[in-house]
Image 1 (cartoon, rainbow, N blue to C red):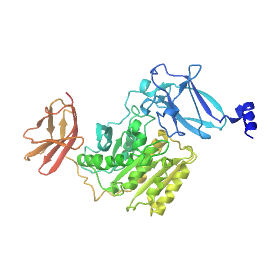
Image 2: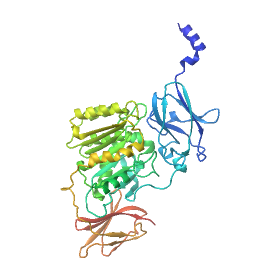
Image 3: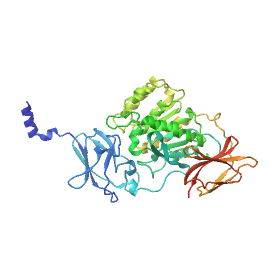
Image 4: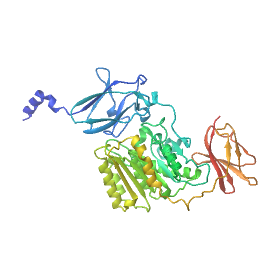
Length: 466
C-alpha cells in the first residue's frame, strides 16, 4: 500500500499541494525606506502589523510577495512596514480603508500596488479639534515599565462653567481624534461630540490612551492565546483604574462615580474594554464594545459568567456582518452570557449592521449612536453645579518663566500649587501678586491650581517652554 502511495505522489505531485493565496506587490512607493521589511496584516492573523510569519519576501522578479492559507470567503488586509504607524495609504498619502478579497479556497495569485505610506507621504495636518489636547506624551505605566501618550477631549463649555462631566476612557488613542496620528483612520470622536453638544448634549470628557504598538496584543488581552501570545490585560487595566483615573479626577471637573464612567474600544480594544467593564464593575458603569475580538480566548465567556453584576450597568455591543464568519456568533454568545448573569434587556444594546466592517470608518460612523445610548439618559440635576465660573485668565501659555493671572476677586489669600501631569505636587506657595514665577521648572506640561482656603477656584494646564 505504501509503495502505491509513493508512486501516486511521484506521478501526481500537484494533487497534494494545499490551496493557497499568493499576493505579489508589483510596485512600492518611491519613498519606501530601502531597509524596511514589508508585512501583511489582516483578519486572518489577528491584525498583527509585524508578524514574522507574514513578512513578504522577494521573488525571482525582485518583487515582494507572500503565500499563505487564509480562511475562505471575504478577507480584509493592509500592508505595513512593521507597525500601524507605518501603514500603507492612498494615492494622496492619506488613510486607505482595509483591502478586501473574496478567497475561493483554490490556489490563487493576485497582484497589487502600494500607493503610499502614511508616515512617509501622508498628511502632516492635524484634524483634531481645538478642545483636544495631549495630556502627557510619556505617562508612566508603572507595572509594565512603559510610558504612553494620553489625549484628553474637553467639552466646548468646559472653561465657562463649573459643571462636572462624565468621562469616557477610550482605547487606541492614536485613532480617536486625529487623522495625522491614526494608523488606519480616525473615529472623529471630537467632531461627533462637538456636534452633539451643539444639538443639546450635556458634554463628556474623553480620555484616549494610545495603544502600545508592538505591545498592543499583550496589553489588550487578559489571557494569552496559543498562537498570538498576550496576557498583560490585568496590568493595563490596573494602570487605567489606579494610576490614570485618579489623575484625571484630581485635575479635571469629573463625575467620578461608576454611573458616569465608561470604557470603550474596538477589536482587541473592545476585548480589553469588556474585561475592564466586568473586572471593575464599581469603576465602569458603561461599556462600548465595538467589533470585539472575543475569539482571542474563550476565557472571556467563563470570566463574564462569574461576575457579580452591579446595578444600573449599560453595555453596547456593535458588530458588522462583513467582519468575519464568526464575529456575530461571538456577540450573540456574549449577549446570552450577560443575560444569564442578570443583565436586563434595557441594559444591553446589540447592534449588527449588514455593511459593518472591521474598520475605523465603521466605528466612526457608529460612535455617536453608541455614546447617546450609553450617556444620553444620565440625570445631572443633583450631581452637578451649573453656575458660571469666574472669568479668570492665565497668560501667557506657553510661557518661558512667568505666568500672570487676571480675574481673581480681591480680599482673598490665595495659594498657587504646581502639579505634574501624573498628579505629583511639586510646589505650593502664597500668591502675593498676579505673577507666578516658574523658572524652577524644566520644560514640559504642568497643572497650575489656585487655592482659596481648602477649595480649588481655578486650575489649568500650562506649558513651560524654554
